[in-house]
Amino acid sequence: MASDQENPGKREQNKARNRSEILAAASVVFVELGYDAATIRDIVARTRLAPGTFYNYFPDKRSVLVALIAEATAEASSRARAARVQARSLEELVYGGFRAYFEFVVSDPATFELMRRNASTLRSLGMDETGFAAGIAELGSDLEAAVRRGTLPAEVPMQYVVPAVAAIAFEIGAAMAASEPPDVEGATKFCAELCLGGLERLHRMSSVGVAMTTAEQEHAAPRAAAGVKSDT
Image 1: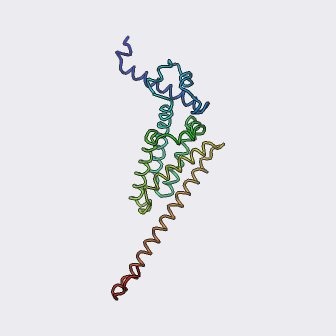
Image 2: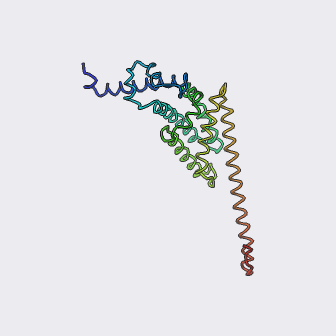
Image 3: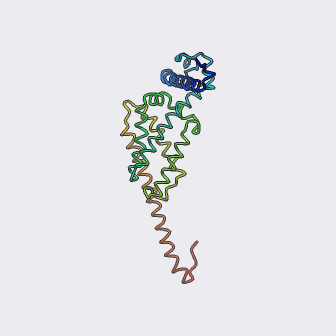
């Protein structure tokens, strides 16, 4: 019978199984004890692995939390993006994206409880490490596509809208996770209407600005033709 050293496939399977076991144990420990109180010893005690094996996969407990959140973020982003791609109107795009994200948070008990217990800690994690940056980039790409389709007003300042939408989703998701029972529809409606109202106001302000500029130009033309100097 081939040993693990002679069977790379089996060796990789063992590594994947051990890593998954550590992550599963950490998820339980972080919920029961809280991230700050939990130790690596607590995590390893929930596995069948030797204490030193932990360090073959993770350098510290923070890296375990990052890995847990990165996996959840990837799934949440995938679901939200699928909902946005199917949208045929601005309302569907906004409501669908928020609803898909909040439904995932609630449907995954481990992620839901992890967010509920450790919301303040999650805010301190790096965006690149946890996959939030990739999710934000996908959101930006989808919103730019919506602009090209005419679903979203072209004058929307993406450099502000994209991170604002992402921040709203995270913070309201954390607040929803802390509530009992979690109100997916309430969270979805609040976030969607907040964003839709803001986009509508931005569009209206932009339209007024264009109209004013046009009116000023029309007013200035006959004055210039008559040789009247500008007041400015």
